[in-house]
Length: 132
Image: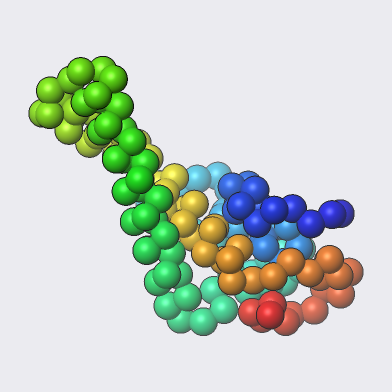
């Protein structure tokens, strides 16, 4: 298997080390939206290599959602000629609908930024931890 771009891999929410295992448990559970297995079922990469690992994902989520919501407000105000209150109502609905998407996407991006792809990971099947 050839190496995928880390952004595409993050979008697909796959393990950054082997690019095959799922990052999140399926099916989606409303009570645990970021429920992740302890490690990748394919290459045994730990999904939480250290306590507080996903703290940086919070900043990614803020940046991603901020620019997305800015685009929503700009579209409503400039192109659709909506009032500020109506635009804010649309923004609140869109924010509620995309909350879990941005939450999971930021975690996926964060681990894909921190853990490197290893083409031999599936073959070795050993526990290497962080994957550096």
